[in-house]
Structure formats: C-alpha cells, structure tokens
Image 1: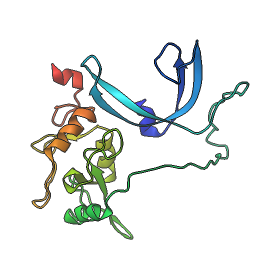
Image 2 (image 1 turned 60 degrees about the horizontal axis):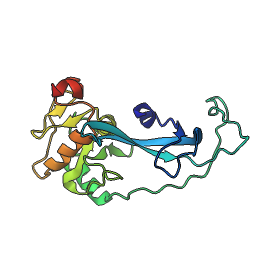
Image 3 (image 1 turned 90 degrees about the horizontal axis):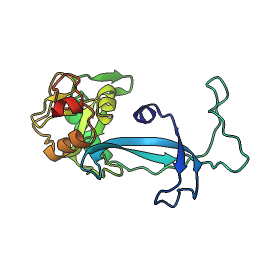
Image 4 (image 1 turned 180 degrees about the vertical axis):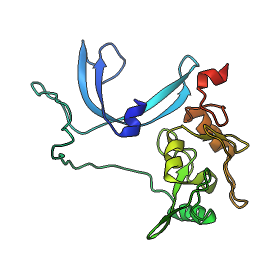
Length: 212
C-alpha cells in the first residue's frame, strides 16, 4: 500500500460481507474497483496499539455485471485520457516565497541550492500536513524549505526531525534561520504519525527496535 502511494499505482479493492458498512455486500465478496492510495500515516488503533492507516480514493469508473476486469494498458500502448476533477488546498504562496527567500533557496537539511535557467529552485514542505485527515496549519512555523529529494523523503516519513533539530533517518541537523521559528508540536506530530524511522539519529532503525 505504501509502495502504491509512493509510485502512484492503483490498488484493487474487494469488499467482504458481514461488515457494518453500507458498501458491504449481503453475501460473499464484491469487487469495488480501482482506488488511489493518496497517503498513509501512523495512528493509535482501537486496541491502543500503533497502526498504519491509508487514505484510499476511488478512481472514477464502475464495474457492471458482465463487464471484464482487465489489467492496465501497457506502457508501450497509447495512454487513455479521462477527465478528472480534483479539489486541493490552496497554500499561502506569499509565506512560501518568504521562507524560500529567507534561506536563499537552500535546503534546510542538506544545504543544496539548485540553480535553474529561470532562477534558483526549492520546495516548501509542511511538517504537519495540511490535507485531511491531518489538517495541519498553513503557518510559517509549520513550513520548511527543502530540496526536492528531501521533500519527498520527509513527506514519506523516511526522514524526521527531533526537538533538538537533529535529523532522524540520516546524519545532520536541520538548519533554522534566527528569524524562522519551528513549532515543536508540528515536529512531534510528524514523528508520531508520519515518520517510518524512529529515534536512530542518522541510522535506519525500525520503530519496533527503537521501542525496546
């Protein structure tokens, strides 16, 4: 599931009977179509143990009786086009520009500054994600200036940041400008809900081994 979220590959959903859900069939199993895995995060389950949750969004299209379920079109075939409507959170671009300028487009994790013909390039990452179900704040203390590589690693939980700004998942520390305050509660949320690695401080360490 995490691999599908990372690569954009859809997953097939089959629903079984006997569940307290409107979509659950009366008997047996029913094929519900293709779903996109839009994200995943760590949370506390009903029994109190930590579990991984996945956000699945159905891809338009419905299988009807007698219709054949086929694999995706091969890469060497002409890609099919379909109209897709999507809603997204509009980020405060003024804040993003200010943070990028404050760091001169240098990554706060590796100090990389990418130069392009049209000017330097960097990306803004939100520590506590904005979209549902996270609903983090679009504020300056929730924003990092990162290179594309570290933005992807951070969003997918391969790297996190400790309260003392030490990187978790690889060596180094987060660079923070004196005029930029980072919210400790945002860092804590990222470690608790998004980080795959735990407190290894520069080495890959599984959450299970870190807890022992």
